[in-house]
Amino acid sequence: MADRAEVSGAAPDHDRLVELLYAGIGEAKPFDSFLKGLRASVDAESSTLIIERQRRDRPGAIYSGAASEERIARYNDLYTQDPFIDLPLGKVTTLAELVGEGGFSRSEFMTSFMTGSGWMHVVGADIVEPSGARVRMRATRVLGRDNFGSAERETFRRLLPHLTQAMGLFLRLNGLEAERELFAGALGRLAVGAIIVDRDCRILQATPQAEAILAEKDVLKNDRGRLRLLDEAGPSGAFTTAVAEIAETSDASFAGSRAFSIHRSCGEALGLVVRPAPHSAKLHAPLRGAALVIIADAGSNVAPQPAVLVRLFSLTPAEAELAALMGQGLDLDDASATLGITKNTAKAHLRMVFSKTGVSRQSELVRLLLRSVDELS
Image (cartoon, rainbow, N blue to C red; front, side, top):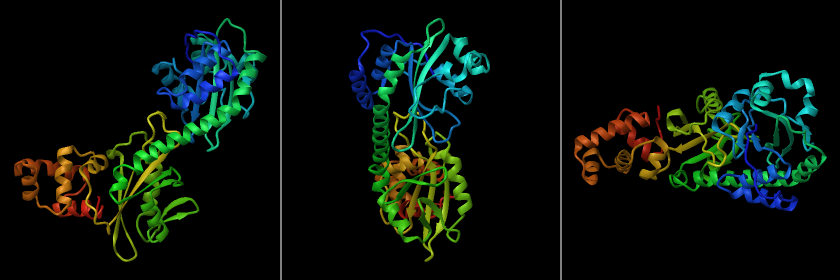
């Protein structure tokens, strides 16, 4: 993946590049200054970092600075044809070395995306950061220029240990940011459990409430690192399928959710909602398919706050305020009086709440909110 970018100023030395690399972790446009410095250091028109997705159907998070949205979209379309992926880990390689002179005319990727757009030489290396994500670093020159030589290769080689550590720190910090937004936010205050799993139900993160439910091994359990719904508790096959499907979507909206009503051995109900997991804004493409499993315990007696309902069910603030009051036990008359709205307005809000939460009666709504999801479908 590459695109032209202007390079100005003196080329930074190795120490300065390392400094820019670590500073890039906190930049609003991650690694933007480092990529500019790298272009100058190896005398290239383009430089790119790509953090690959766990599922290899598209590239993942691309940081290129000057790349247009159209060119990134084009690369996504041709990603599987890119011959310059899966390089030997830790080895600096050029495209010409990999494909040979005849390789530049063998595919649409080479004739259209590369030489057809004025690009020719690429130098690159792949690393795997500590959590297991593969990261690609590339620099590109235009047609008519010489290939990258030993000096540019050495620049790349000396950066690789630092790239491994910096990208590990970057992913860890952004993972903590997403976790904090989720677990320290509305869901944590609602006394519901939340678990982030990958498409194969491997547990990535879990709230303390969720850990407690898993420890009971009554309806859900941690089965050697995977979230498993016990067959006697509910539709385990449908749950696993929902996780796999939803984990691959990038739309973290309630409209893409699946809801399940399951039961403990004592007869009490648990509600499960499976929805796309949130991801940090800096990682502008999900790196691995992930789903958020919201667990609502029927034994909970904590009424939700309006902000929680807005986040969970995409309610408007007015709808959420009405639903929260009814979750505290108020009937429609009392709730409308408390809010200072007419009963007809309250009824209109209630119809929208019913539609968005998937219930059809007022008693079901109260049970959904006050008892933390008894019947969701």
